[in-house]
Image (tube, rainbow, N blue to C red):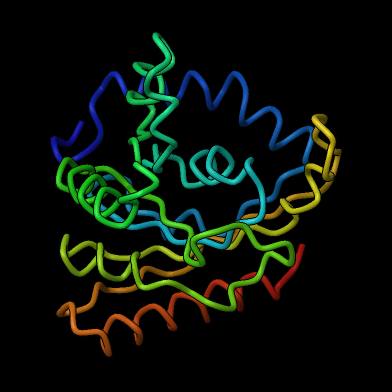
Length: 212
């Protein structure tokens, strides 16, 4: 195993959760389809950027790229015994709401330096139509600082998994398309960050338009 990747304990937890819960649900319940897995670096730092429409998106995305993806999580979750240790092993890192930008970037850079893939939802929030219309510059900034490539991913159909007011996931088809790697910005100049961000958004939306 290469040294520039996730800790062994995190890999074990990832595979245990993937094969016991996420993969069976994705493949059987959601009739999941995945395209482009050959574009995913098997190890080393990479910033995974995607659209976002469901709470199910992080585990589905991690499952489909075939390696753990570190995501931010509410700080309150890290105050729960046992859960704290479990989600940290799985790659979650705490974010304070009042300082989300600073803490998110700092934590993401730490994970990338340790060889993780780090996930960023390009619009920063869930969108009901699953498309990216107002991409944020955070992913490009993180990629520029870490000198890590960006991996665009499109999630299709996840907005229909949960209806408002319902706790039971619906049996709906889900498709994940993984795009080609995009080299990180050469600097943190705003114009370059905007250019790379728009390129990521365009590729994700184009993958999404391919549909099921």
